[in-house]
Image (spheres, rainbow, N blue to C red):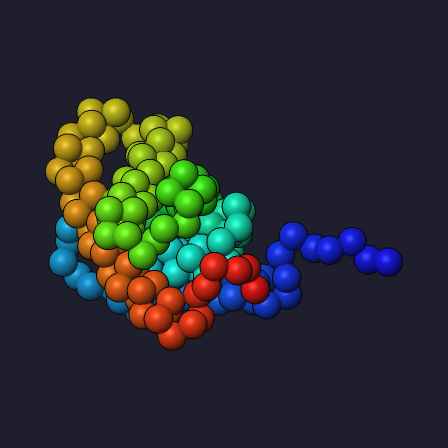
Length: 180
């Protein structure tokens, strides 16, 4: 007799695709707007949609781990190998939001809050790594002011878009009350 696994093979495949999609979106949607946190509008979507479909604690962490490993391996982010920490952390925060808000990612408030919090945490981890690497703290404090506002706005917008996607998937029967 085999013990039942926490994540099914289908769930692992879906979470892996969502993690890879975050990485791909970061690569494909390189918009040269030079506004901090603007990529949050893109990467928040597969994170929230993946958590909405699987609905189990650890889903966001797994998705964040996959996207962080890809980002670290290919070294496309500013922090290269340290990108794994920021993506793992955003997954943990999205997981916490999922549990706290009972996976109600069809709610505008929950989607926006989750997107904004996840994107801000990514900023905090980036600045934390920079402090550990020896970047002068006054440069970091200067950058946090404007950055925190734009990270909140773009993360919230990504969360807002995910709400509409989750609602459509729910109406289509892809997301239901029961875990698949």
